[in-house]
Image (cartoon, rainbow, N blue to C red; front, side):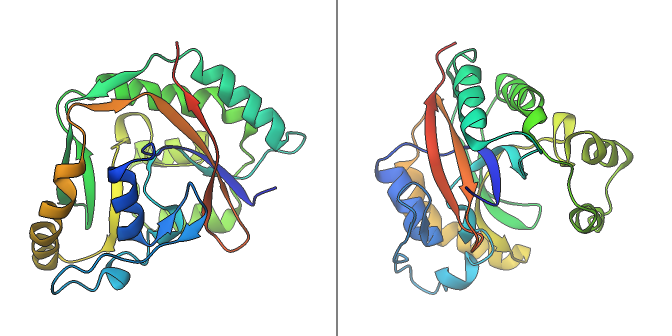
Length: 225
């Protein structure tokens, strides 16, 4: 059993996933630490400390504790059934950007399907989510949430869903814009040639957070709807 669960997009095994795991220092599929790449003038370990525990991922349903009376096995079955109702789709690609204070890969082009799929996952699996504890809600509210984000937090346990959802694969903790530009320039030649274009989204991954706060792949589900 894990402390919390989440539904993420995680890249399938291959050069893109391997580089991202190395960059972050954590392979969430294998459940092991990785040696960081050596990139001139970058302290990769320091840059990636905050997001390391997640590994490379794009959040679809944010981490949650299991609701009373539900089990991991039931969540696995429900996620498998849900994946069978969602068709695979493609994004035009991913861009490397310093956005909202951190470095991330962001989708190119039309994201209507992606956003709809994410919201469907949020809603379809919400019976498995226990209410967030007061301390977590208080921490979220420190981000000066909008009225709509506060409503999302109350309804779904996470403020950044629906119209406030912005898919991204996080690559750093918070860094200032000047350093963000330098890191982008240094990282791009190593990372961007590995990013598929167009970018397929044909699986979702059920993740579990262990007692040390590290996230592990539980199972990867094909989108076959």
